[in-house]
Length: 209
Image (cartoon, rainbow, N blue to C red; front, side):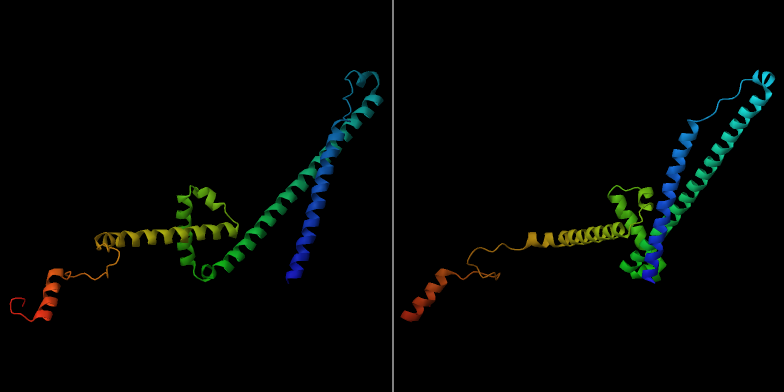
């Protein structure tokens, strides 16, 4: 099926190229015909030489018919080219939609989630200065994926900022440890009491006790 689709697209592109070339040739033919327009026969010739007047008038009529025919054919080809462009654009939109569903499978099965996510993406795009009209014109699935990544990044940064705001006051109240300290909070041992205990052990005197 993929090979058949590729072949059909290739054939379609060939037809479009031939049609564009045909339209270009019709435009050139129109320019050539406009440069060869016969002059209208003078009115007095109708009385002095009716046969000549009739012949020249027929040349003018034939020229106008030929020019109108080329113009009609040119318009027909241009309208067909416009329809081809619309069909190609519709095919492009369908292809991008399929790729978007491949990137976000939930969107294909859950329309509510898809709409919710798209609203969030629209809000993220507005944060970067994109208007609704500009966002509505986005069809490339890669641009939507980039916008989704930007939304996830902004969400993560907001969560980190909120966590930092909660932790920062606690950090400010925490005791500052000096080098060599154990980090344990409590009464420091008195050096004089320790010396007195050592003296009591060595002398055993009641006064030292």
